[in-house]
Image (cartoon, rainbow, N blue to C red):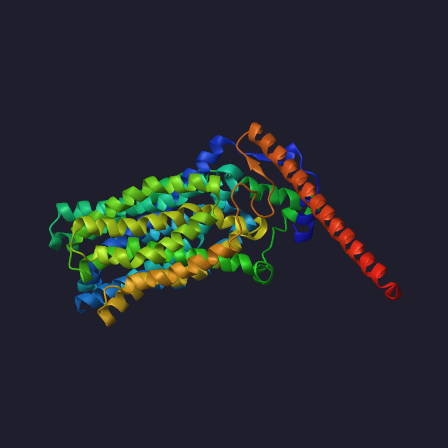
Length: 510
Protein backbone atom coordinates (compact mmCIF):
# COMPACT_ATOMS: atom_id res chain seq x y z
CA UNK A 1 0.00 0.00 0.00
CA UNK A 2 1.46 3.35 -1.00
CA UNK A 3 1.91 6.24 1.42
CA UNK A 4 -0.61 8.33 -0.49
CA UNK A 5 -3.19 5.57 -0.30
CA UNK A 6 -2.64 5.27 3.43
CA UNK A 7 -3.03 9.00 3.83
CA UNK A 8 -6.23 9.10 1.80
CA UNK A 9 -7.70 6.31 3.91
CA UNK A 10 -6.83 8.22 7.06
CA UNK A 11 -8.79 11.20 5.74
CA UNK A 12 -11.94 9.09 5.40
CA UNK A 13 -14.50 9.25 8.24
CA UNK A 14 -13.81 6.67 10.96
CA UNK A 15 -16.53 4.06 11.53
CA UNK A 16 -16.97 1.48 14.27
CA UNK A 17 -16.10 -1.30 11.79
CA UNK A 18 -12.73 0.35 11.18
CA UNK A 19 -11.69 -0.34 14.78
CA UNK A 20 -10.17 -3.82 15.24
CA UNK A 21 -11.37 -5.66 18.34
CA UNK A 22 -8.62 -8.03 19.52
CA UNK A 23 -9.64 -11.51 20.63
CA UNK A 24 -8.40 -11.93 24.21
CA UNK A 25 -7.44 -15.60 23.80
CA UNK A 26 -5.34 -14.89 20.71
CA UNK A 27 -3.78 -11.91 22.46
CA UNK A 28 -2.64 -14.02 25.42
CA UNK A 29 -1.17 -16.64 23.06
CA UNK A 30 0.71 -13.97 21.13
CA UNK A 31 2.20 -12.29 24.21
CA UNK A 32 3.16 -15.64 25.80
CA UNK A 33 4.79 -16.93 22.61
CA UNK A 34 6.77 -13.72 22.07
CA UNK A 35 7.85 -13.36 25.71
CA UNK A 36 8.96 -16.98 26.04
CA UNK A 37 11.08 -16.79 22.91
CA UNK A 38 12.66 -13.61 24.21
CA UNK A 39 13.28 -15.30 27.56
CA UNK A 40 15.19 -18.04 25.79
CA UNK A 41 17.32 -15.50 23.92
CA UNK A 42 18.30 -13.74 27.13
CA UNK A 43 18.66 -17.00 29.03
CA UNK A 44 21.64 -17.67 26.79
CA UNK A 45 23.04 -14.17 27.17
CA UNK A 46 22.60 -14.37 30.93
CA UNK A 47 24.29 -17.75 31.18
CA UNK A 48 27.14 -16.64 28.95
CA UNK A 49 27.81 -13.55 31.04
CA UNK A 50 27.71 -15.45 34.31
CA UNK A 51 30.03 -18.25 33.15
CA UNK A 52 32.39 -16.03 31.12
CA UNK A 53 35.21 -16.65 33.61
CA UNK A 54 34.74 -20.43 33.16
CA UNK A 55 34.58 -20.19 29.38
CA UNK A 56 37.79 -18.16 29.44
CA UNK A 57 39.56 -20.97 31.30
CA UNK A 58 38.07 -23.72 29.11
CA UNK A 59 38.57 -22.12 25.67
CA UNK A 60 41.54 -19.76 26.30
CA UNK A 61 43.60 -21.60 28.96
CA UNK A 62 47.04 -20.19 27.98
CA UNK A 63 46.06 -16.55 28.50
CA UNK A 64 46.25 -14.52 31.71
CA UNK A 65 43.02 -14.30 33.78
CA UNK A 66 42.31 -10.74 32.56
CA UNK A 67 42.88 -11.70 28.91
CA UNK A 68 40.76 -14.83 29.38
CA UNK A 69 37.86 -12.66 30.54
CA UNK A 70 38.26 -10.17 27.71
CA UNK A 71 38.53 -13.02 25.16
CA UNK A 72 35.38 -14.73 26.47
CA UNK A 73 33.44 -11.46 26.48
CA UNK A 74 34.87 -10.68 23.04
CA UNK A 75 33.35 -13.91 21.76
CA UNK A 76 30.08 -12.63 23.24
CA UNK A 77 30.42 -9.26 21.46
CA UNK A 78 31.61 -10.33 17.98
CA UNK A 79 28.22 -11.86 16.99
CA UNK A 80 26.67 -8.42 17.33
CA UNK A 81 28.48 -7.52 14.12
CA UNK A 82 26.30 -9.98 12.17
CA UNK A 83 23.06 -8.97 13.88
CA UNK A 84 22.33 -6.26 11.28
CA UNK A 85 22.57 -8.94 8.56
CA UNK A 86 20.08 -11.08 10.46
CA UNK A 87 17.93 -8.02 11.07
CA UNK A 88 17.78 -7.14 7.37
CA UNK A 89 17.15 -10.75 6.32
CA UNK A 90 14.44 -11.53 8.86
CA UNK A 91 12.99 -8.02 8.65
CA UNK A 92 12.40 -8.33 4.91
CA UNK A 93 10.99 -11.83 5.34
CA UNK A 94 8.73 -10.65 8.15
CA UNK A 95 7.31 -7.79 6.07
CA UNK A 96 6.78 -10.07 3.08
CA UNK A 97 5.56 -13.34 4.58
CA UNK A 98 4.38 -12.45 8.06
CA UNK A 99 5.71 -12.08 11.59
CA UNK A 100 4.62 -15.47 12.93
CA UNK A 101 6.56 -17.55 10.37
CA UNK A 102 9.78 -15.63 10.88
CA UNK A 103 9.59 -15.83 14.68
CA UNK A 104 9.21 -19.61 14.45
CA UNK A 105 12.40 -19.77 12.35
CA UNK A 106 14.47 -17.52 14.62
CA UNK A 107 13.70 -19.55 17.72
CA UNK A 108 14.76 -22.78 15.95
CA UNK A 109 18.16 -21.31 14.99
CA UNK A 110 18.62 -19.85 18.47
CA UNK A 111 17.83 -23.13 20.25
CA UNK A 112 20.12 -25.25 18.06
CA UNK A 113 23.11 -22.88 18.25
CA UNK A 114 22.78 -22.47 22.03
CA UNK A 115 22.49 -26.23 22.55
CA UNK A 116 25.59 -26.78 20.41
CA UNK A 117 27.73 -24.55 22.66
CA UNK A 118 27.30 -27.16 25.36
CA UNK A 119 28.65 -29.84 22.99
CA UNK A 120 31.92 -28.10 22.07
CA UNK A 121 35.02 -29.92 23.40
CA UNK A 122 37.54 -27.91 25.43
CA UNK A 123 40.76 -26.35 24.13
CA UNK A 124 42.68 -29.14 25.84
CA UNK A 125 40.82 -31.68 23.68
CA UNK A 126 40.71 -30.16 20.19
CA UNK A 127 42.98 -27.12 20.46
CA UNK A 128 42.22 -24.01 18.39
CA UNK A 129 39.04 -25.54 16.99
CA UNK A 130 37.37 -25.09 20.40
CA UNK A 131 37.24 -21.24 20.35
CA UNK A 132 36.55 -21.33 16.58
CA UNK A 133 33.47 -23.54 17.08
CA UNK A 134 32.35 -21.35 19.98
CA UNK A 135 32.58 -18.30 17.73
CA UNK A 136 30.61 -20.03 14.94
CA UNK A 137 27.81 -20.90 17.38
CA UNK A 138 27.74 -17.33 18.65
CA UNK A 139 27.61 -16.02 15.07
CA UNK A 140 24.58 -18.23 14.37
CA UNK A 141 22.97 -16.87 17.52
CA UNK A 142 23.75 -13.31 16.47
CA UNK A 143 22.17 -13.86 13.05
CA UNK A 144 18.95 -15.28 14.53
CA UNK A 145 18.73 -12.70 17.30
CA UNK A 146 18.91 -10.02 14.60
CA UNK A 147 15.27 -10.74 13.86
CA UNK A 148 14.16 -12.11 17.24
CA UNK A 149 13.57 -9.16 19.56
CA UNK A 150 12.34 -6.76 16.89
CA UNK A 151 10.02 -9.39 15.43
CA UNK A 152 8.64 -10.22 18.87
CA UNK A 153 8.15 -6.52 19.64
CA UNK A 154 6.28 -5.98 16.37
CA UNK A 155 4.24 -9.13 16.96
CA UNK A 156 3.06 -8.02 20.42
CA UNK A 157 2.57 -4.38 19.45
CA UNK A 158 0.40 -5.27 16.45
CA UNK A 159 -1.73 -7.55 18.59
CA UNK A 160 -2.09 -5.17 21.55
CA UNK A 161 -5.08 -2.81 21.88
CA UNK A 162 -4.05 0.85 21.74
CA UNK A 163 -4.88 1.53 25.41
CA UNK A 164 -2.93 -1.51 26.70
CA UNK A 165 0.09 -1.58 24.37
CA UNK A 166 2.51 -0.33 27.02
CA UNK A 167 1.46 -2.91 29.61
CA UNK A 168 1.40 -5.83 27.17
CA UNK A 169 4.64 -4.78 25.50
CA UNK A 170 6.40 -4.64 28.87
CA UNK A 171 5.98 -8.42 29.20
CA UNK A 172 8.41 -8.89 26.31
CA UNK A 173 11.30 -7.51 28.37
CA UNK A 174 9.82 -9.23 31.41
CA UNK A 175 10.68 -12.38 29.46
CA UNK A 176 14.19 -11.03 28.89
CA UNK A 177 14.77 -10.44 32.60
CA UNK A 178 13.15 -13.77 33.49
CA UNK A 179 15.55 -15.48 31.08
CA UNK A 180 18.45 -13.79 32.84
CA UNK A 181 17.12 -14.86 36.24
CA UNK A 182 16.67 -18.45 35.08
CA UNK A 183 20.14 -18.56 33.56
CA UNK A 184 21.83 -16.90 36.53
CA UNK A 185 19.90 -19.01 39.03
CA UNK A 186 20.91 -22.20 37.26
CA UNK A 187 24.57 -21.10 37.25
CA UNK A 188 24.44 -20.29 40.99
CA UNK A 189 22.82 -23.66 41.72
CA UNK A 190 25.47 -25.55 39.76
CA UNK A 191 28.31 -23.58 41.35
CA UNK A 192 26.86 -24.31 44.79
CA UNK A 193 26.46 -28.04 44.17
CA UNK A 194 29.65 -28.66 42.20
CA UNK A 195 33.26 -28.00 43.07
CA UNK A 196 35.06 -25.58 40.72
CA UNK A 197 37.10 -28.30 38.92
CA UNK A 198 33.88 -30.24 38.22
CA UNK A 199 32.10 -27.08 37.10
CA UNK A 200 34.95 -26.26 34.71
CA UNK A 201 35.02 -29.83 33.42
CA UNK A 202 31.33 -30.26 32.55
CA UNK A 203 29.05 -28.25 34.87
CA UNK A 204 29.14 -25.10 32.70
CA UNK A 205 27.62 -27.09 29.81
CA UNK A 206 24.35 -27.87 31.60
CA UNK A 207 22.72 -24.43 31.19
CA UNK A 208 23.33 -24.54 27.45
CA UNK A 209 21.69 -27.95 27.16
CA UNK A 210 18.56 -26.51 28.80
CA UNK A 211 18.09 -24.37 25.66
CA UNK A 212 16.95 -27.49 23.75
CA UNK A 213 13.66 -28.16 25.56
CA UNK A 214 13.07 -24.40 26.00
CA UNK A 215 13.37 -23.98 22.24
CA UNK A 216 10.87 -26.77 21.55
CA UNK A 217 8.37 -25.19 23.93
CA UNK A 218 8.84 -21.76 22.36
CA UNK A 219 8.45 -23.19 18.86
CA UNK A 220 5.21 -24.93 19.84
CA UNK A 221 3.74 -21.71 21.26
CA UNK A 222 4.79 -19.59 18.30
CA UNK A 223 3.50 -22.10 15.77
CA UNK A 224 0.13 -22.11 17.60
CA UNK A 225 -0.14 -18.30 17.52
CA UNK A 226 -1.90 -16.66 14.55
CA UNK A 227 -0.63 -13.89 12.32
CA UNK A 228 -1.08 -10.34 13.64
CA UNK A 229 -4.29 -8.46 12.69
CA UNK A 230 -2.30 -5.49 11.36
CA UNK A 231 -0.28 -7.59 8.90
CA UNK A 232 -3.39 -9.54 7.84
CA UNK A 233 -5.25 -6.27 7.16
CA UNK A 234 -2.24 -4.97 5.24
CA UNK A 235 -2.38 -7.96 2.86
CA UNK A 236 -6.17 -7.71 2.50
CA UNK A 237 -5.93 -4.03 1.56
CA UNK A 238 -3.27 -4.77 -1.03
CA UNK A 239 -5.33 -7.58 -2.49
CA UNK A 240 -8.31 -5.24 -2.90
CA UNK A 241 -6.16 -2.65 -4.65
CA UNK A 242 -4.23 -5.10 -6.79
CA UNK A 243 -5.53 -8.50 -7.90
CA UNK A 244 -1.95 -9.69 -8.34
CA UNK A 245 -1.11 -8.92 -4.72
CA UNK A 246 -1.47 -12.59 -3.75
CA UNK A 247 1.38 -13.43 -6.11
CA UNK A 248 3.31 -10.20 -5.52
CA UNK A 249 3.99 -9.93 -1.80
CA UNK A 250 4.72 -6.44 -0.42
CA UNK A 251 8.26 -5.35 -1.19
CA UNK A 252 10.57 -3.32 1.03
CA UNK A 253 12.55 -0.37 -0.27
CA UNK A 254 15.42 0.53 2.03
CA UNK A 255 15.97 3.72 0.05
CA UNK A 256 12.43 4.73 1.01
CA UNK A 257 13.01 3.74 4.65
CA UNK A 258 16.17 5.81 4.97
CA UNK A 259 14.77 8.82 3.10
CA UNK A 260 11.21 9.05 4.44
CA UNK A 261 11.72 7.71 7.96
CA UNK A 262 15.14 9.07 8.85
CA UNK A 263 13.93 10.79 12.04
CA UNK A 264 12.16 7.64 13.25
CA UNK A 265 15.30 5.59 12.54
CA UNK A 266 17.49 7.97 14.57
CA UNK A 267 15.03 8.00 17.46
CA UNK A 268 14.98 4.20 17.42
CA UNK A 269 18.79 4.02 17.40
CA UNK A 270 19.06 6.48 20.29
CA UNK A 271 16.54 4.63 22.45
CA UNK A 272 18.11 1.24 21.74
CA UNK A 273 21.60 2.55 22.56
CA UNK A 274 20.82 3.94 26.01
CA UNK A 275 18.62 0.97 26.95
CA UNK A 276 20.91 -1.83 25.80
CA UNK A 277 24.20 -0.29 26.93
CA UNK A 278 22.66 -0.14 30.41
CA UNK A 279 21.24 -3.65 29.97
CA UNK A 280 24.53 -5.27 29.02
CA UNK A 281 26.49 -3.29 31.60
CA UNK A 282 24.23 -4.48 34.42
CA UNK A 283 23.23 -7.97 33.36
CA UNK A 284 26.18 -9.23 31.31
CA UNK A 285 29.32 -7.36 32.39
CA UNK A 286 28.51 -6.82 36.08
CA UNK A 287 29.16 -10.42 37.23
CA UNK A 288 32.59 -10.25 35.61
CA UNK A 289 33.23 -6.78 37.07
CA UNK A 290 32.37 -7.98 40.58
CA UNK A 291 34.59 -11.06 40.35
CA UNK A 292 37.53 -10.01 38.14
CA UNK A 293 37.82 -6.31 39.00
CA UNK A 294 36.57 -6.16 42.59
CA UNK A 295 37.63 -9.61 43.76
CA UNK A 296 34.28 -10.92 44.98
CA UNK A 297 33.57 -14.62 44.64
CA UNK A 298 31.54 -15.51 41.57
CA UNK A 299 28.74 -16.95 43.70
CA UNK A 300 28.48 -13.83 45.89
CA UNK A 301 28.31 -11.39 42.97
CA UNK A 302 25.87 -13.48 40.97
CA UNK A 303 23.54 -13.98 43.94
CA UNK A 304 23.24 -10.22 44.54
CA UNK A 305 22.45 -9.60 40.86
CA UNK A 306 19.85 -12.38 40.84
CA UNK A 307 18.04 -10.70 43.74
CA UNK A 308 18.14 -7.36 41.89
CA UNK A 309 16.75 -8.96 38.72
CA UNK A 310 13.90 -10.59 40.64
CA UNK A 311 13.01 -7.10 41.85
CA UNK A 312 13.11 -5.86 38.24
CA UNK A 313 10.54 -8.49 37.29
CA UNK A 314 8.00 -6.84 39.59
CA UNK A 315 8.79 -3.30 38.41
CA UNK A 316 8.71 -4.08 34.66
CA UNK A 317 4.93 -4.49 34.12
CA UNK A 318 4.23 -1.59 36.52
CA UNK A 319 6.20 0.76 34.26
CA UNK A 320 4.36 -0.59 31.21
CA UNK A 321 0.99 -0.13 32.94
CA UNK A 322 1.63 3.49 33.91
CA UNK A 323 3.08 4.30 30.49
CA UNK A 324 -0.44 3.70 29.16
CA UNK A 325 -1.65 6.35 31.60
CA UNK A 326 0.99 9.09 31.42
CA UNK A 327 2.89 8.26 28.23
CA UNK A 328 6.19 6.71 27.11
CA UNK A 329 8.30 9.90 26.88
CA UNK A 330 8.37 10.62 30.63
CA UNK A 331 9.83 7.20 31.40
CA UNK A 332 12.60 7.45 28.80
CA UNK A 333 13.51 10.92 30.08
CA UNK A 334 13.36 9.99 33.78
CA UNK A 335 15.40 6.84 33.16
CA UNK A 336 18.07 8.70 31.16
CA UNK A 337 18.38 11.58 33.65
CA UNK A 338 18.47 9.09 36.53
CA UNK A 339 21.26 7.16 34.80
CA UNK A 340 23.28 10.36 34.32
CA UNK A 341 22.94 11.39 37.98
CA UNK A 342 23.21 7.97 39.62
CA UNK A 343 25.95 6.22 37.60
CA UNK A 344 28.88 7.47 39.69
CA UNK A 345 27.18 7.07 43.10
CA UNK A 346 26.07 3.57 42.09
CA UNK A 347 29.59 2.44 41.22
CA UNK A 348 30.96 3.94 44.43
CA UNK A 349 28.43 1.80 46.32
CA UNK A 350 29.22 -1.29 44.22
CA UNK A 351 32.93 -0.95 45.06
CA UNK A 352 32.34 -0.37 48.78
CA UNK A 353 32.83 -4.01 49.90
CA UNK A 354 29.54 -3.68 51.82
CA UNK A 355 26.81 -6.07 50.69
CA UNK A 356 23.99 -3.62 51.48
CA UNK A 357 25.63 -0.78 49.53
CA UNK A 358 26.49 -3.10 46.63
CA UNK A 359 22.84 -4.09 46.43
CA UNK A 360 21.76 -0.43 46.60
CA UNK A 361 24.13 0.56 43.79
CA UNK A 362 22.86 -2.24 41.56
CA UNK A 363 19.28 -1.35 42.48
CA UNK A 364 19.74 2.25 41.30
CA UNK A 365 20.90 1.08 37.87
CA UNK A 366 18.15 -1.56 37.73
CA UNK A 367 15.37 0.96 38.39
CA UNK A 368 16.50 3.38 35.69
CA UNK A 369 16.86 0.41 33.34
CA UNK A 370 13.26 -0.61 34.12
CA UNK A 371 12.09 2.87 33.12
CA UNK A 372 13.51 2.27 29.64
CA UNK A 373 12.80 -1.41 29.09
CA UNK A 374 9.25 -0.93 30.36
CA UNK A 375 8.37 1.21 27.33
CA UNK A 376 10.79 0.17 24.58
CA UNK A 377 8.79 -2.72 23.08
CA UNK A 378 5.61 -0.61 22.87
CA UNK A 379 7.34 2.54 21.60
CA UNK A 380 9.66 1.41 18.80
CA UNK A 381 7.15 -0.48 16.57
CA UNK A 382 4.79 2.51 16.68
CA UNK A 383 7.38 4.68 14.91
CA UNK A 384 6.95 2.91 11.54
CA UNK A 385 3.99 1.91 9.29
CA UNK A 386 2.95 -1.74 8.96
CA UNK A 387 4.36 -2.51 5.53
CA UNK A 388 7.96 -1.64 6.51
CA UNK A 389 7.69 -1.92 10.31
CA UNK A 390 9.70 -5.12 10.78
CA UNK A 391 12.43 -4.16 8.28
CA UNK A 392 12.85 -0.59 9.52
CA UNK A 393 12.86 -1.53 13.18
CA UNK A 394 15.22 -4.48 12.70
CA UNK A 395 17.64 -2.29 10.71
CA UNK A 396 17.79 0.57 13.22
CA UNK A 397 17.73 -1.72 16.26
CA UNK A 398 20.61 -3.88 15.10
CA UNK A 399 22.76 -0.97 13.94
CA UNK A 400 22.53 0.36 17.51
CA UNK A 401 23.13 -3.10 18.93
CA UNK A 402 26.56 -3.24 17.25
CA UNK A 403 27.65 -0.47 19.61
CA UNK A 404 25.64 -1.63 22.63
CA UNK A 405 26.82 -5.23 22.27
CA UNK A 406 30.44 -4.16 22.60
CA UNK A 407 29.71 -2.81 26.09
CA UNK A 408 31.03 -5.79 28.13
CA UNK A 409 34.22 -6.06 26.09
CA UNK A 410 34.93 -2.31 25.97
CA UNK A 411 34.17 -1.86 29.67
CA UNK A 412 36.49 -4.74 30.63
CA UNK A 413 39.22 -3.35 28.35
CA UNK A 414 38.88 0.20 29.74
CA UNK A 415 39.16 -1.02 33.33
CA UNK A 416 42.16 -3.19 32.45
CA UNK A 417 43.97 -0.44 30.51
CA UNK A 418 43.31 2.48 32.86
CA UNK A 419 43.06 0.70 36.19
CA UNK A 420 40.12 3.03 36.90
CA UNK A 421 37.16 1.11 38.34
CA UNK A 422 34.83 4.04 37.56
CA UNK A 423 35.17 3.69 33.77
CA UNK A 424 31.86 1.74 33.47
CA UNK A 425 30.08 4.62 35.24
CA UNK A 426 31.47 7.16 32.76
CA UNK A 427 30.42 4.84 29.94
CA UNK A 428 26.85 4.81 31.27
CA UNK A 429 26.83 8.61 31.57
CA UNK A 430 27.60 8.95 27.86
CA UNK A 431 24.71 6.60 27.09
CA UNK A 432 22.46 8.68 29.39
CA UNK A 433 23.16 11.84 27.38
CA UNK A 434 22.08 10.01 24.21
CA UNK A 435 18.86 8.97 25.97
CA UNK A 436 18.08 12.49 27.16
CA UNK A 437 18.53 13.93 23.66
CA UNK A 438 16.36 11.14 22.18
CA UNK A 439 13.56 11.81 24.68
CA UNK A 440 13.08 15.34 23.33
CA UNK A 441 12.50 14.10 19.79
CA UNK A 442 10.46 10.99 20.63
CA UNK A 443 6.80 11.42 19.57
CA UNK A 444 4.26 10.33 22.18
CA UNK A 445 2.67 7.08 21.04
CA UNK A 446 0.64 6.07 24.11
CA UNK A 447 -3.10 5.42 23.55
CA UNK A 448 -2.78 6.09 19.83
CA UNK A 449 -2.94 3.75 16.83
CA UNK A 450 0.45 2.75 15.54
CA UNK A 451 1.69 4.74 12.57
CA UNK A 452 -0.55 4.16 9.56
CA UNK A 453 -2.76 1.63 11.39
CA UNK A 454 -6.44 1.79 12.28
CA UNK A 455 -7.34 1.88 16.01
CA UNK A 456 -7.47 -1.38 17.98
CA UNK A 457 -9.56 -2.11 21.08
CA UNK A 458 -10.00 -4.85 23.67
CA UNK A 459 -13.79 -5.08 23.21
CA UNK A 460 -16.79 -3.43 21.52
CA UNK A 461 -17.35 -1.09 24.46
CA UNK A 462 -13.78 0.21 24.21
CA UNK A 463 -14.13 0.48 20.42
CA UNK A 464 -17.17 2.73 20.85
CA UNK A 465 -15.24 4.80 23.40
CA UNK A 466 -12.33 5.15 20.95
CA UNK A 467 -14.71 6.22 18.20
CA UNK A 468 -16.33 8.78 20.49
CA UNK A 469 -12.90 10.03 21.56
CA UNK A 470 -11.78 10.34 17.94
CA UNK A 471 -14.79 12.47 17.04
CA UNK A 472 -14.37 14.54 20.21
CA UNK A 473 -10.77 15.18 19.21
CA UNK A 474 -11.93 16.26 15.74
CA UNK A 475 -14.55 18.55 17.28
CA UNK A 476 -11.94 19.98 19.64
CA UNK A 477 -9.55 20.53 16.75
CA UNK A 478 -12.26 22.29 14.76
CA UNK A 479 -13.07 24.45 17.81
CA UNK A 480 -9.37 25.29 18.25
CA UNK A 481 -9.11 26.26 14.58
CA UNK A 482 -12.25 28.39 14.92
CA UNK A 483 -10.71 30.17 17.91
CA UNK A 484 -7.52 30.80 15.94
CA UNK A 485 -9.56 32.19 13.03
CA UNK A 486 -11.48 34.45 15.42
CA UNK A 487 -8.24 35.65 16.99
CA UNK A 488 -6.74 36.39 13.57
CA UNK A 489 -9.90 38.24 12.53
CA UNK A 490 -9.77 40.32 15.71
CA UNK A 491 -6.13 41.14 15.04
CA UNK A 492 -7.02 42.08 11.47
CA UNK A 493 -9.81 44.35 12.66
CA UNK A 494 -7.44 45.95 15.14
CA UNK A 495 -4.91 46.57 12.38
CA UNK A 496 -7.60 48.07 10.16
CA UNK A 497 -8.68 50.38 12.98
CA UNK A 498 -5.08 51.42 13.59
CA UNK A 499 -4.64 52.12 9.89
CA UNK A 500 -7.80 54.22 9.87
CA UNK A 501 -6.57 56.28 12.83
CA UNK A 502 -3.31 56.95 11.00
CA UNK A 503 -5.22 58.01 7.87
CA UNK A 504 -7.47 60.29 9.95
CA UNK A 505 -4.40 62.00 11.42
CA UNK A 506 -2.62 62.24 8.08
CA UNK A 507 -5.27 62.45 5.30
CA UNK A 508 -2.64 63.03 2.62
CA UNK A 509 -1.30 59.46 3.22
CA UNK A 510 -4.54 57.80 2.06
